[in-house]
Amino acid sequence: MRKLSKQTTKTLTAAALLTAAALTLTACGSDGGDSKKKVADVSVEPGSDKAATVIDQPFKKPDLVLTDTHGKKYDLREQTKGKPVLLYYGYTNCPDVCPLTMSNIAVAKKSLLQKKAVSKAELDKLQVVFVTTDPERDTSKELGKWLKAQDPEFIGLTGDFPTIQGSGRTVGINIEPSKKLKNGKIESMHGTQVIAFSPKSDAGYVVYNGKDATSKDYEQDLPKILKGQNP
Image (cartoon, rainbow, N blue to C red; front, side, top):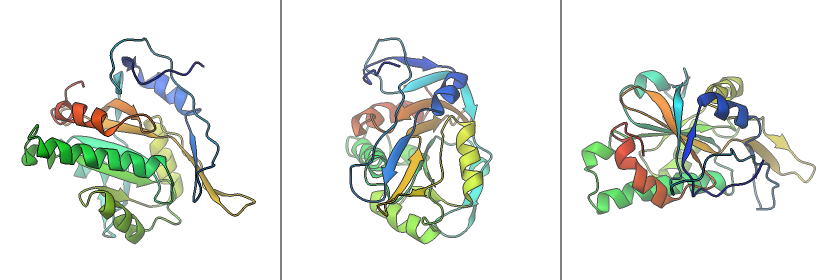
């Protein structure tokens, strides 16, 4: 499958993304930057410079109940109902894509406020949810400490791996159990998509590849996502 830059217009069905998810994985090591990567790009029609993929058959929000960074039960559907949501699956020991993705979103939020592109009240409605793919190491305490350095308002969730893995599949994100390599490093294979859910329908209708989307992309799109509009 040919590789495309993010300078494209992307409109796909949820079924297409679910099919691609079986191949769209990034291998992250617990340390070092030499981890091999396996990534499949979804072919789309060339067009504008949008980083977003707008899907014409949106995903249902995962029916997911996990534990937050305060050690309390967190029902994703119930507690984010009627709010704009950015959902990402990753882990705190990831050396590259995960911290970069969360940092990009945090930077975009700050920039929007500084430029007064949105009001604080509007931006406060945004729920950025980080679900760990490595729950054995990512306890509530570890998640809280890591996310606080990114943005104190980010929500971190942990729990049992089968539940997390199953919820990822429902939104086209493939997650594999962490593996210890012969050299002692921990490798985790997980999809790098960020999914935006509309406050109007609670459906996931926009997808970003965390490897490619920049802070500028999020800054450009968030004002519309906050309203449930297509970026």
